[in-house]
Image (cartoon, rainbow, N blue to C red; front, side, top):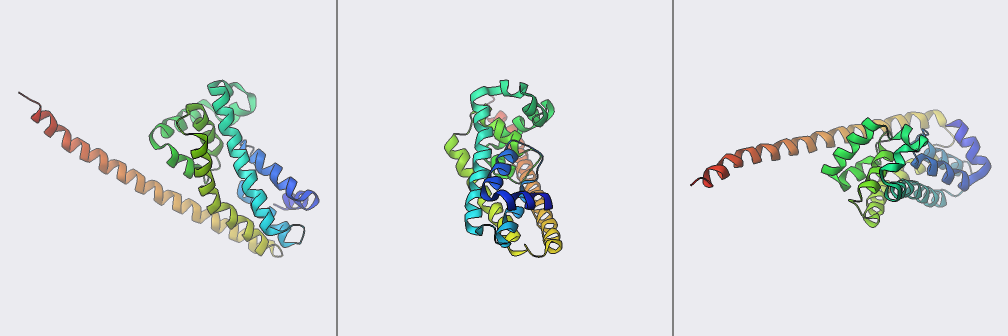
Length: 211
């Protein structure tokens, strides 16, 4: 985080936007740390925190949208590109594609909180064309508006106490994972319940159809 703070302090909004853009491409730079670092330089007086939030939201949405359009324009041919091939491995791509067929826009929303799969999900959404770009942006915006302000304002608030800030980041990441796990368990429970209900109804329907 210290390296990002130093870089952002020198180049301001442009640097934050650039790093968030390449984060959207799946480059292994933690997006939450990038956002917090942007908030930190605001807290240190280099930028305005409210404008930093606007720049951060635009950087996040443009980066995510780029992955969507790469998938939509090139289709599965994009998977042959060296950089994309490292991000979207065949196994990861197959897993995300299968989940996307079942979950659609719900997976898009959750993907914002899944650093390892985020770029692949956005790529798949473009390749499958099951989600229009308008819906993609709306879902991505509503997911981003939950997390982005939290990280930026947290960085601004703790700019002068980085040890405290590191501790809060870890707590925040833990809370996000707990919420995702609970949500995953709930979705799995609903799926099992729905499947069980269908299996109970099926024999009845077969009996009714008999002559």
